[in-house]
Image (cartoon, rainbow, N blue to C red; front, top):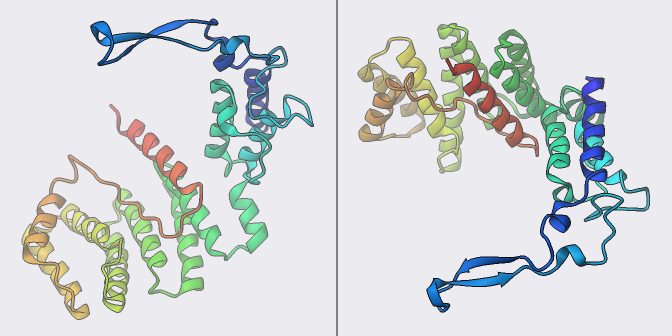
Length: 306
């Protein structure tokens, strides 16, 4: 990991400091382009690009756009790589001002910071090991582990996240419902369908109770119903049995899904094997939740490829 850490920093410095900004050097002064124009003869007109390269900008030091120069021209790129590797949140240069290849370095840092002991370790040290943010980081890392078939490690993190959220919010909180769903999806992936069904039933109860108490459908209820229906289909239940089970679960909360909606859900659950949807839910989001889920989706697609 230290080699990778040093590599991202060196990469950022080289491709930003040692290379001029292509926006200032790629186009010769006075270059013209044809652009569509309804009023011009032939439907096109000539546009002359300003002499950007002729501006009094000294590029022999590298890309100076958007940089903090008090600490040297390499400080922006180096600091951007370091702070994204460990997620301390500091910045002294606009990340979008980095040269394209230099900008790849902080992007990789965002993806890998949990491996360097960054975001998760910082939150655990700052807030304590039982804080909800720690549970979110555990869910994010577990999702990546699951996507790379490290299922035993992922299960341990999912279970720890569930325990943290139950301790903080109680067993009926939507975050706990999300944790139950994620753990159940992993158990389903390891063919422990009966255990997964018990957790999915608890998960659906959480979202049904939340919907009944607030008078508004919980935003995760629809996905939870679909995931549970798909699990029942994997367990060999018929569409009629799936509809009956969902109706029985919703009845104590005074919620009626509607026969048409249930029939459609039951029908779709039979097709999940050919067109799978994401079974993962996230309750409490951090700035890294979306990147983690995108990376995990890419890894999952790669693992499914023949």
